[in-house]
Length: 338
Ligand code: TXA
Ligand code: MG
Image (cartoon, rainbow, N blue to C red; front, top):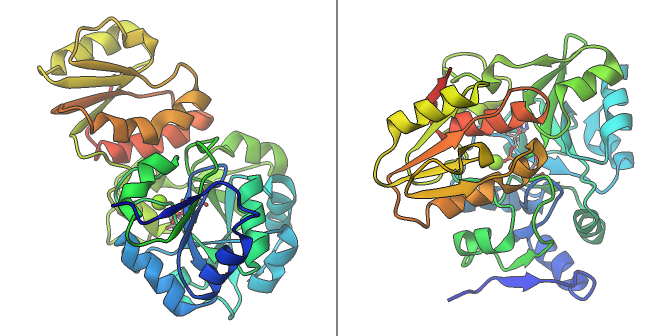
């Protein structure tokens, strides 16, 4: 039984949506990156519901979504010119900037940290939703923890059906990967989670940009972690995955053939389409298409009775870094690079 109502016309439901958020309930809404599962960031009960419903670890902080960059100073302090420049250049858009939090943001949102992730989405429906409810919305990606993030209604609906009353349908998420998470550390922007806004784009604006070691490496829980989200198993289908990358297509094809079982799905570009296997799924032939399709196709892979998904890796530059950050975790670090 489907209980969750899908809203196609946000204007028609604006009073209901406002009431839902005022009653400390959750609403799923689209953004340009992925769908978010949101609640009033200023209410502890509402925020706790997010953690419960997602089965999310309490020490993994949430991002706060605002309707406009003019709202930022109500909830966070902009401490230097670099933060200001990042805001002016990339917001609204697919970026989250970690800023010093103000006292009005409850500790449960930030998992006790003195910083808060601020995001101003550019997606029109997200923006309209944030204006209608007129409170800051804490929202992680709309997926049960460890599962691939939700990028379309049909992928998410069954996961939250009896736990969330309304989902606003905005079609397929345009980008398909979550926002770039950036924190200015010792005056240098540092990417904690790569996304559509790349290292190269940030460098153009402020000269330099670091990428946290944790982006491509397994995180040891005893180390100091800037972005707690990197600690957890993530983005994973139920079927076992193996990620393989080589710049040399022949090397790549030969390596893949070594690992094939009778029930292997190959998820990759058209470079691999003629390799004989149980099922071939073309995830796209350019980085933007791959990013757009990735999470939904990982979920699709689970619908075939495969015992292995071999995923073709990409070069770790530009948007490729974000794709590989997700895929390395999808495959639980089961990764071969030749
Ligand atoms: O695109 C997105 O960012 C989506 C949409 C819904 O906006 N949201 C999203 O949220 O991906 P979530 O909760 O799945 O990922 C938030 C990431 C986590 O890795 C978390 O650890 C990190 O941001 N984060 C949040 N607040 C932080 C903080 N104060 N310091 C460091 N990392 C933080
Ligand atoms: Mg997430």
